[in-house]
Length: 217
Image 1 (cartoon, rainbow, N blue to C red):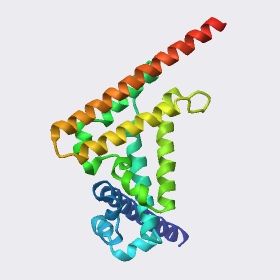
Image 2 (image 1 turned 90 degrees about the vertical axis):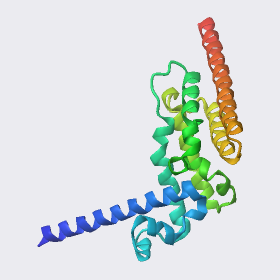
Image 3 (image 1 turned 60 degrees about the vertical axis):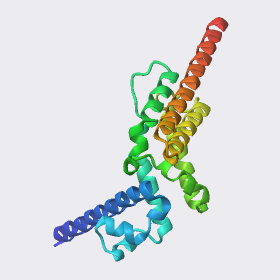
Image 4 (image 1 turned 30 degrees about the vertical axis):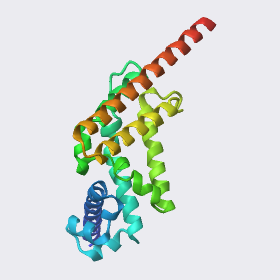
């Protein structure tokens, strides 16, 4: 009897986790496409294929749903935007990340976009809890960008990573906002060029520092 009860309990837990995943996936898609206004309880539950009542098994409010869906969207997408390999220098990493992010395909695909872009304007007007979640995930992304070049657990390229994200998020947002496609493409190109200049300056700076360390030995 105990085994039957345990099996039934595990099945219920699995079903609850499955329903939560469906809600988070639906919420993340709607946030990317429509911003915070898209994360209403009724449309999210409809897209998830679940009843309205199932919502309260997981969340107490729409605000809780919006935060959870945003965090899910960022954590799901973070590896795609921050994982690279084989760069010999920090500057090379910056250029590679910018090329991936500031792409026309990213600009044109809202449904699979980075949620930082989709919600940057909404976050500025959101409540404190959402802004705190946005900031927390943004800081984690900065750390992930620095990841392969982290020394002793410290983020040593924080300012460069902030500049990269400002150019990337801002570049995609502006390129989507304008109507002229050629101008939109120009925005993406100019932002990539700005990152390249930042990257070259960063590598020059680190080369100088390495030379100075060698001279002091």
